[in-house]
Length: 107
Image (cartoon, rainbow, N blue to C red; front, side, top):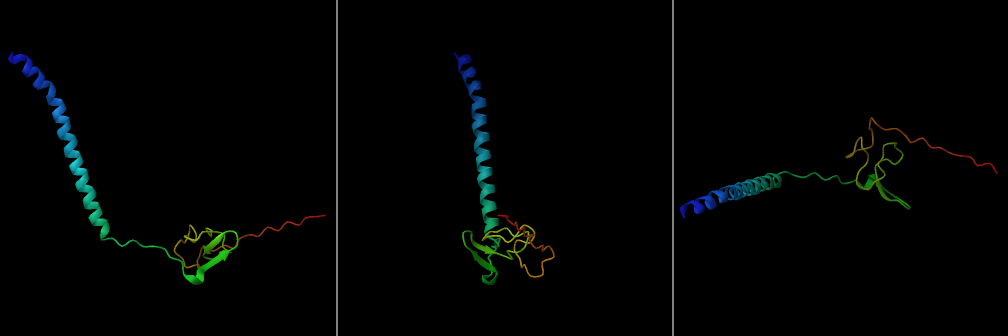
């Protein structure tokens, strides 16, 4: 009579150990997420905002920022370029003017 109960109890031990491990891992993860959220709240997030004098409206494209004649301009309203995303464009050492290709059509 005692032997079958002992077998059943021993059979439940891995299941109980697994539940205990999962609970412990979830609690540890929740604690780490809470700590990360608390640490992040103290960090000031820098936002890149275009200067109004640096902003252009191009018909069919929308608002662009930065020097639109530069080869590296991202043609975006959010980022100037990959080389100098926060600007300013004046005096940028990476500036290269776009090569304009003009095609003449013969009639």
